[in-house]
Image 1 (cartoon, rainbow, N blue to C red):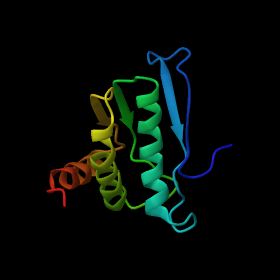
Image 2: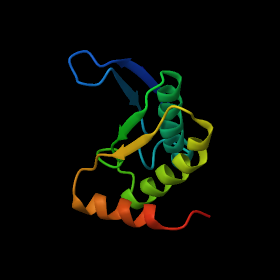
Image 3: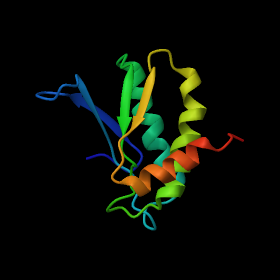
Length: 117
């Protein structure tokens, strides 16, 4: 088993992707510090993608479903972490978010359109 914030990679088997990166996000209100653990999920998944020379990756809004992380806060952590780490990588050219509904999409679009501080 993996701990919150960790990521592992497996083969894609019968999927169209060569690999699947799995990460365990924090349970909001239980796993502390939530923001660091959530950032670690994105950071560790991107690190694995780079190590395996993966050029594109798709993320859900990690921990926002059953784990209860507020979507806007999770989007801010995701965006901040990606902006921080992506300049260090050579292979990753595309990052997508695959979201559950229009509300989550609107929150992510709003969050991602804000200036980076």
